Image (cartoon, rainbow, N blue to C red; front, top):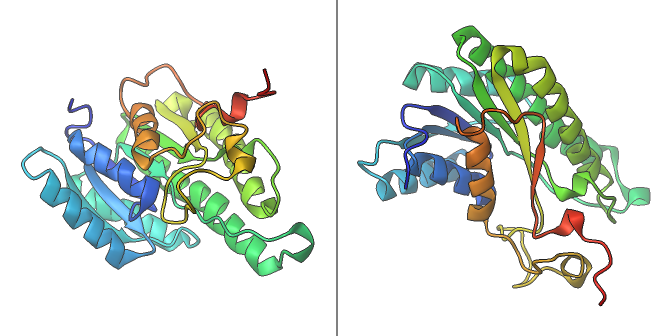
Length: 257
Protein backbone atom coordinates (compact mmCIF):
# COMPACT_ATOMS: atom_id res chain seq x y z
CA UNK A 1 0.00 0.00 0.00
CA UNK A 2 1.26 3.46 -0.90
CA UNK A 3 1.47 6.33 1.59
CA UNK A 4 -0.32 9.03 -0.40
CA UNK A 5 -1.62 10.67 2.76
CA UNK A 6 1.46 10.65 4.96
CA UNK A 7 1.50 13.87 7.03
CA UNK A 8 -1.99 14.74 5.78
CA UNK A 9 -4.83 15.54 8.18
CA UNK A 10 -8.37 14.55 7.26
CA UNK A 11 -11.86 14.72 8.70
CA UNK A 12 -14.42 12.08 7.71
CA UNK A 13 -17.95 12.95 8.76
CA UNK A 14 -20.25 10.04 9.48
CA UNK A 15 -17.13 7.93 9.76
CA UNK A 16 -18.28 5.55 12.47
CA UNK A 17 -19.97 3.04 10.17
CA UNK A 18 -20.33 1.84 6.60
CA UNK A 19 -18.87 3.89 3.78
CA UNK A 20 -17.48 6.52 6.15
CA UNK A 21 -15.64 3.94 8.23
CA UNK A 22 -14.20 2.37 5.07
CA UNK A 23 -12.97 5.76 3.86
CA UNK A 24 -11.41 6.58 7.24
CA UNK A 25 -9.72 3.17 7.27
CA UNK A 26 -8.30 3.65 3.79
CA UNK A 27 -6.90 7.09 4.58
CA UNK A 28 -5.22 5.89 7.78
CA UNK A 29 -3.85 2.86 5.95
CA UNK A 30 -2.16 5.28 3.56
CA UNK A 31 -0.66 7.38 6.35
CA UNK A 32 -3.30 10.01 7.15
CA UNK A 33 -4.26 11.32 10.54
CA UNK A 34 -8.03 11.11 10.50
CA UNK A 35 -10.69 12.62 12.72
CA UNK A 36 -13.72 10.34 12.62
CA UNK A 37 -16.54 12.80 13.33
CA UNK A 38 -19.94 11.28 13.97
CA UNK A 39 -23.13 11.78 15.93
CA UNK A 40 -22.60 8.24 17.26
CA UNK A 41 -19.60 9.22 19.37
CA UNK A 42 -19.17 5.89 21.14
CA UNK A 43 -19.27 3.95 17.88
CA UNK A 44 -16.79 6.42 16.37
CA UNK A 45 -14.40 5.80 19.25
CA UNK A 46 -14.65 2.06 18.72
CA UNK A 47 -14.02 2.47 15.00
CA UNK A 48 -10.99 4.67 15.68
CA UNK A 49 -9.59 2.18 18.19
CA UNK A 50 -10.04 -0.68 15.74
CA UNK A 51 -8.30 1.24 12.95
CA UNK A 52 -5.40 2.20 15.21
CA UNK A 53 -4.95 -1.39 16.37
CA UNK A 54 -5.00 -2.63 12.80
CA UNK A 55 -2.49 -0.13 11.44
CA UNK A 56 -0.27 0.53 14.43
CA UNK A 57 3.13 1.70 13.25
CA UNK A 58 1.97 2.48 9.70
CA UNK A 59 2.24 6.24 10.20
CA UNK A 60 -1.44 7.12 10.25
CA UNK A 61 -3.83 7.31 13.16
CA UNK A 62 -7.49 7.87 13.91
CA UNK A 63 -9.24 9.86 16.60
CA UNK A 64 -12.97 10.25 17.25
CA UNK A 65 -15.06 13.35 17.85
CA UNK A 66 -18.74 14.12 18.31
CA UNK A 67 -20.33 15.82 15.31
CA UNK A 68 -23.97 16.58 14.62
CA UNK A 69 -23.85 18.09 11.15
CA UNK A 70 -27.16 19.86 11.72
CA UNK A 71 -25.39 22.26 14.08
CA UNK A 72 -22.64 24.64 12.98
CA UNK A 73 -21.03 24.74 16.41
CA UNK A 74 -20.13 21.05 16.27
CA UNK A 75 -18.74 21.40 12.75
CA UNK A 76 -16.54 24.26 13.90
CA UNK A 77 -15.48 22.20 16.91
CA UNK A 78 -14.53 19.22 14.73
CA UNK A 79 -12.29 21.37 12.53
CA UNK A 80 -10.74 22.98 15.61
CA UNK A 81 -10.14 19.55 17.14
CA UNK A 82 -8.27 18.30 14.06
CA UNK A 83 -6.19 21.48 13.88
CA UNK A 84 -5.39 21.47 17.60
CA UNK A 85 -4.39 17.81 17.54
CA UNK A 86 -2.43 17.68 14.28
CA UNK A 87 -1.68 21.23 13.25
CA UNK A 88 -3.87 21.72 10.20
CA UNK A 89 -6.45 20.28 7.82
CA UNK A 90 -5.85 18.96 4.31
CA UNK A 91 -8.88 16.80 3.49
CA UNK A 92 -12.58 16.77 4.28
CA UNK A 93 -14.79 13.86 3.31
CA UNK A 94 -18.38 14.98 3.89
CA UNK A 95 -20.08 11.62 4.18
CA UNK A 96 -22.64 11.99 6.99
CA UNK A 97 -26.18 11.36 5.83
CA UNK A 98 -29.45 9.57 6.46
CA UNK A 99 -31.83 7.70 4.15
CA UNK A 100 -35.26 8.15 5.75
CA UNK A 101 -38.02 7.55 3.21
CA UNK A 102 -41.76 8.08 2.95
CA UNK A 103 -44.30 8.39 0.14
CA UNK A 104 -44.55 11.96 -1.15
CA UNK A 105 -48.18 12.42 -0.06
CA UNK A 106 -47.39 11.15 3.44
CA UNK A 107 -44.03 12.86 4.01
CA UNK A 108 -44.05 15.06 7.09
CA UNK A 109 -42.30 18.38 7.54
CA UNK A 110 -40.22 16.78 10.28
CA UNK A 111 -38.89 14.02 8.02
CA UNK A 112 -38.22 16.45 5.16
CA UNK A 113 -36.39 18.89 7.41
CA UNK A 114 -34.29 16.23 9.13
CA UNK A 115 -33.11 14.72 5.82
CA UNK A 116 -32.36 18.09 4.22
CA UNK A 117 -30.61 19.44 7.32
CA UNK A 118 -28.50 16.32 7.77
CA UNK A 119 -27.64 15.55 4.16
CA UNK A 120 -27.50 18.98 2.51
CA UNK A 121 -26.90 21.49 5.28
CA UNK A 122 -24.38 19.08 6.78
CA UNK A 123 -22.31 19.06 3.58
CA UNK A 124 -22.62 22.84 3.30
CA UNK A 125 -21.62 23.71 6.85
CA UNK A 126 -18.81 21.16 7.16
CA UNK A 127 -17.47 22.17 3.75
CA UNK A 128 -17.57 25.84 4.67
CA UNK A 129 -15.82 25.34 8.01
CA UNK A 130 -13.16 23.11 6.45
CA UNK A 131 -12.61 25.41 3.47
CA UNK A 132 -12.18 28.45 5.70
CA UNK A 133 -9.43 26.60 7.57
CA UNK A 134 -7.77 25.51 4.32
CA UNK A 135 -7.87 29.08 2.97
CA UNK A 136 -6.29 30.37 6.18
CA UNK A 137 -3.49 27.82 5.84
CA UNK A 138 -2.81 28.95 2.29
CA UNK A 139 -1.80 25.66 0.66
CA UNK A 140 -5.05 24.31 -0.72
CA UNK A 141 -6.80 21.07 0.07
CA UNK A 142 -9.32 18.49 -1.04
CA UNK A 143 -13.02 18.21 -0.27
CA UNK A 144 -14.95 15.08 -1.23
CA UNK A 145 -18.72 15.13 -0.87
CA UNK A 146 -20.71 11.92 -0.81
CA UNK A 147 -23.73 12.17 -3.12
CA UNK A 148 -25.77 9.26 -4.52
CA UNK A 149 -27.17 7.99 -7.77
CA UNK A 150 -30.50 9.05 -6.24
CA UNK A 151 -29.31 12.57 -6.99
CA UNK A 152 -29.72 11.81 -10.70
CA UNK A 153 -33.03 9.92 -10.72
CA UNK A 154 -36.38 10.11 -9.02
CA UNK A 155 -37.43 7.20 -6.84
CA UNK A 156 -40.41 6.17 -4.76
CA UNK A 157 -40.22 7.45 -1.22
CA UNK A 158 -37.14 9.51 -1.96
CA UNK A 159 -38.48 13.05 -2.32
CA UNK A 160 -36.32 14.36 0.52
CA UNK A 161 -33.36 12.04 0.06
CA UNK A 162 -33.17 12.47 -3.70
CA UNK A 163 -33.57 16.23 -3.45
CA UNK A 164 -30.78 16.43 -0.88
CA UNK A 165 -28.39 14.38 -3.01
CA UNK A 166 -29.22 16.29 -6.21
CA UNK A 167 -28.51 19.50 -4.33
CA UNK A 168 -25.18 18.11 -3.12
CA UNK A 169 -24.16 17.58 -6.75
CA UNK A 170 -24.91 21.21 -7.59
CA UNK A 171 -23.29 22.41 -4.36
CA UNK A 172 -20.16 20.45 -5.25
CA UNK A 173 -19.96 22.24 -8.60
CA UNK A 174 -20.42 25.66 -7.01
CA UNK A 175 -17.85 24.97 -4.29
CA UNK A 176 -15.39 23.79 -6.92
CA UNK A 177 -15.76 26.99 -8.93
CA UNK A 178 -15.47 29.33 -5.97
CA UNK A 179 -12.61 27.54 -4.19
CA UNK A 180 -10.41 26.85 -7.21
CA UNK A 181 -8.42 30.05 -6.74
CA UNK A 182 -7.38 28.80 -3.31
CA UNK A 183 -6.31 25.43 -4.80
CA UNK A 184 -9.08 23.63 -2.95
CA UNK A 185 -10.41 20.92 -5.25
CA UNK A 186 -13.97 19.77 -4.63
CA UNK A 187 -15.43 16.60 -6.12
CA UNK A 188 -18.08 14.06 -5.18
CA UNK A 189 -18.51 10.32 -5.20
CA UNK A 190 -22.00 8.97 -5.90
CA UNK A 191 -22.49 5.45 -4.56
CA UNK A 192 -25.12 3.14 -5.91
CA UNK A 193 -26.54 0.21 -3.92
CA UNK A 194 -23.86 -0.50 -1.32
CA UNK A 195 -23.61 -3.11 1.41
CA UNK A 196 -23.99 -1.11 4.64
CA UNK A 197 -25.71 -1.70 7.96
CA UNK A 198 -29.05 -0.68 6.40
CA UNK A 199 -28.68 -3.03 3.42
CA UNK A 200 -31.33 -5.71 3.14
CA UNK A 201 -30.57 -9.11 1.62
CA UNK A 202 -27.59 -10.50 -0.24
CA UNK A 203 -28.43 -8.90 -3.57
CA UNK A 204 -29.97 -5.55 -4.52
CA UNK A 205 -33.72 -5.68 -5.16
CA UNK A 206 -34.70 -6.32 -8.78
CA UNK A 207 -35.75 -2.69 -9.18
CA UNK A 208 -32.08 -1.77 -8.78
CA UNK A 209 -30.20 -4.80 -10.12
CA UNK A 210 -32.10 -4.79 -13.44
CA UNK A 211 -30.50 -1.38 -14.09
CA UNK A 212 -26.98 -2.37 -13.10
CA UNK A 213 -24.32 -3.63 -15.50
CA UNK A 214 -22.71 -5.15 -12.39
CA UNK A 215 -25.82 -6.47 -10.61
CA UNK A 216 -24.53 -6.74 -7.05
CA UNK A 217 -24.03 -4.61 -3.99
CA UNK A 218 -20.92 -2.51 -3.92
CA UNK A 219 -18.69 -2.88 -0.90
CA UNK A 220 -17.85 0.16 1.25
CA UNK A 221 -14.19 -0.39 0.43
CA UNK A 222 -14.96 0.06 -3.27
CA UNK A 223 -16.49 3.46 -2.58
CA UNK A 224 -13.48 4.29 -0.41
CA UNK A 225 -11.15 3.61 -3.36
CA UNK A 226 -12.82 6.36 -5.37
CA UNK A 227 -12.98 8.77 -2.45
CA UNK A 228 -9.30 8.21 -1.68
CA UNK A 229 -8.26 9.16 -5.20
CA UNK A 230 -10.39 12.32 -5.09
CA UNK A 231 -8.84 13.23 -1.73
CA UNK A 232 -5.27 12.66 -2.89
CA UNK A 233 -2.68 14.88 -4.54
CA UNK A 234 -2.99 12.62 -7.60
CA UNK A 235 -6.32 14.33 -8.21
CA UNK A 236 -4.71 17.55 -9.37
CA UNK A 237 -6.63 18.71 -12.46
CA UNK A 238 -10.13 17.52 -11.67
CA UNK A 239 -12.67 19.57 -9.75
CA UNK A 240 -16.43 19.91 -9.70
CA UNK A 241 -17.09 16.39 -10.93
CA UNK A 242 -19.19 13.54 -9.60
CA UNK A 243 -17.75 10.04 -9.86
CA UNK A 244 -20.37 7.29 -9.81
CA UNK A 245 -19.40 4.11 -7.98
CA UNK A 246 -22.63 2.30 -8.74
CA UNK A 247 -22.10 -0.81 -10.84
CA UNK A 248 -23.08 1.08 -13.96
CA UNK A 249 -26.50 2.16 -12.65
CA UNK A 250 -26.32 5.73 -13.92
CA UNK A 251 -25.30 4.77 -17.47
CA UNK A 252 -27.59 1.80 -18.02
CA UNK A 253 -30.39 2.04 -20.56
CA UNK A 254 -32.16 -0.92 -22.14
CA UNK A 255 -30.72 -4.20 -20.87
CA UNK A 256 -32.49 -6.59 -23.26
CA UNK A 257 -30.60 -8.34 -26.06
